[in-house]
Image (cartoon, rainbow, N blue to C red; front, side):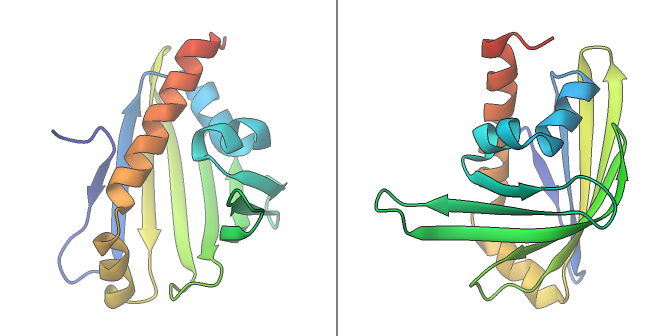
Length: 157
């Protein structure tokens, strides 16, 4: 079955593009990336920092049942245009992956639907290819599906 969130990676390039059309209004989709409480719900992580402005930053942390940190990531926000664009870095802490640069573009398709396009640039082709060997596409697709479900079940307006 084809995933709703598509990952496009050209051979021999150090970048990839993630696209998804959502059954969500643009304002809600953007809020899902900029509101700590909502972000934590669909990403399944704790947001310890979220400063959505140029030169702001963020940090996510996921813990196991014993309270041990099993995943943490952070980044700096370089550009922030509400309901339109976020340019940020993304770094998984304590992992072999180097920092990546992400360009997130948000687009309204209709009053009830929107589209997200993420252009992600890795330091090397090898780094990008290693990321693609992980269940990256399935994970982001599951998170985006949960985001749509949260919107539906909570009757956000």
